[in-house]
Image (cartoon, rainbow, N blue to C red):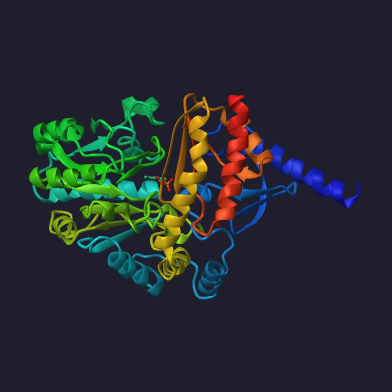
Length: 436
Ligand SMILES: *Cc1c(COP(=O)(O)O)cnc(C)c1O
């Protein structure tokens, strides 16, 4: 074999072994859809093993806000590796974690005072739910052990997180019988910039009024419901939820794992409604997509309540809690974001997405198009065949991964207008082809 052939056969054996040995997210190992092998990436470009170059529209699921292979983030990781990559967090502390927690408290809405570092978004949600339960236990109200969530919500794949995802069209109804049962209100209907109608929250109000004695917390994704439908809703809804939680003495958990760090045009989506939740979950973009890290913030009232209870401490502590490498990169990523002209930049991306997505509305297969911040959504009338359409997107030079009826993009914040146009044009070619 010559060297090109050798490389080719090595590559094909990686893909063969991938299908033989490796689970991918929500994947089958008996009827696998081939994956694409990435060998490197920089900026908004993914380089595949066969030489194909793709414009990334996904930010690797909301994470890589500064693009791939960023020199500042690379530097932060390398510098920290030479000091200490990991050390246990029980009884030990370090500057990267302390700096990060202080920073998160500074930049999140006023009233979030304490930070618990977790290792993934789902764990941050578990921690938030556990905080809420432990808080009411400490307060001598053990019967407050139910949650109120919204339909079309998504909060992660672990058990407590699954139990508050949409119970029907979520990904977890299979596990109905082994999950804790909670309350669900209808998904908000008032559009992000729509006129508020109190009817929109009538059923939510009804549930919280009748069930508050057993409700520990309301959990929701503020403003943008992500993986449960890519829906944008009115800040008035969120404002009313905060008022009702106060009125009925129920904690409010805001899951900002997808929306945090600028994605919607505010640093945190709660700012659209000018509210502070009692507990907030962060993840995804927190390290700029370099490493897995998440955080659960809470108010001093919650932390004090928990710590004055019978246990005397919060009963949780992951092995990799406060990983220094992840914290160091998170600190660099947050500085990079805040020192940029990020607000104007997100407005630019929103304007470009809005105008570039307009022509899609005329395709007969498309039900709706919408954009908010650096999120663009094309909602189809029928679910798409992900395996087949993914192949066409790759052929068109773009990386887009739809689910169900939703073809959507959340590009890295560094995407230029030209790159955004390339991305949307690639998508248009493919969807136009489907319509013809
Ligand atoms: C992705 C996501 C999660 C889960 O985070 P993981 O890191 O995948 O565990 C939870 N909530 C929301 C809103 C998310 O978008």
